[in-house]
Amino acid sequence: MKPHFFLLLSFLLFIGSAISQCQNKNVTPASWYPDFVQMESSTTACWIVDLGVGKSYTEGDTSDTVTLKKDYTINGQGSTFFEVVFVINGNVRFTNTLFQIPVVSPYYHKKNLFRIESSGFLILEGGDVRSYRLAINQLSGGSGRFTGVGFTDNRVVIVNRQDSLQEALTSSFNSCNISRNLGSDGDNAQSEVAVGIGIGCDCSLASLDPLQFFFSRFEIKNTNISGNIGIKGVLYTAGSKGQISNSYFSDNTGRSGALLIEFSSHLTISSTRFERNSALFGGAISLHNSDMNVVNSTFTSNVASLS
Image 1 (cartoon, rainbow, N blue to C red):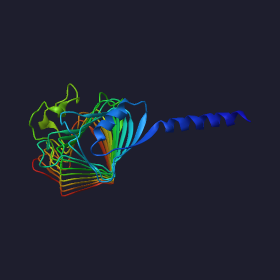
Image 2 (spheres, one colour; image 1 turned 90 degrees about the vertical axis):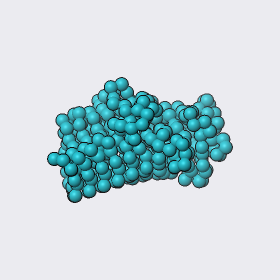
Image 3 (cartoon, rainbow, N blue to C red; image 1 turned 60 degrees about the vertical axis):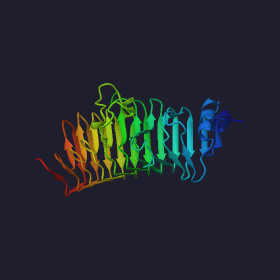
Image 4 (cartoon, rainbow, N blue to C red; image 1 turned 180 degrees about the vertical axis):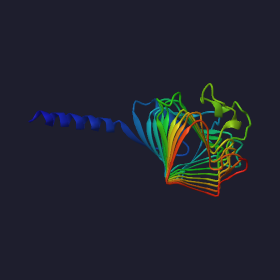
């Protein structure tokens, strides 16, 4: 046999061995939390988890979090998590899952959902995230990809804080619906929302807008951002680099417009519509000490109360 045949055979055996490290696991509402703990303590490198169609899962002790250090693909199949907090340390993928704080819950608008730590990569595909104080707290070195997800009726959708733009990984929103998020309500300024955002950041809740990027890279495409309320702007960037394409900003309200771009940020906007956004300053966009390139985009009926 030729030497390259043995190389190919060795490669296929290696791939087969890597795939075999992933195991399937079915979980039920009564056992999902112990099962996750058990999976974390196992020697298996990664898990494919089937939550079951349309099931509901509730964290028993609301002061605890579920830490996921291994690699998971979690098939939600329309299942719902109530009042569950996840710390992401591995590569974690949720599909078609609803995360929700019920309106009747005392934790309504009082809890985080995801904290992505330095070794974490979070993928959300489909599903919805509703009624959290902070849906995604992305720490330095963490990253995420969100596709076809609805983010509605939260206070803050994402705070992405990186140590430096040069080392930041790109987080992306693709084909998402981001609507009716209210920004922070200003209470309990040093609460869990501020955990891990970083020294030097204005961590008071009164300063948090629905989408915030500090020294980070982001991409937003094919996404609807409508009916949100921001403290400064609905989307706020400081020292960041972003791309927005084929998206729609409408009926948003913020002190400085739907977008507030400042502190040496760099933003490219293409094929995007801005309609009926209102602010004291800026209307659709406010730009301060930053660079912006706008291509093939339209601005209609945006209003700034003060010039």
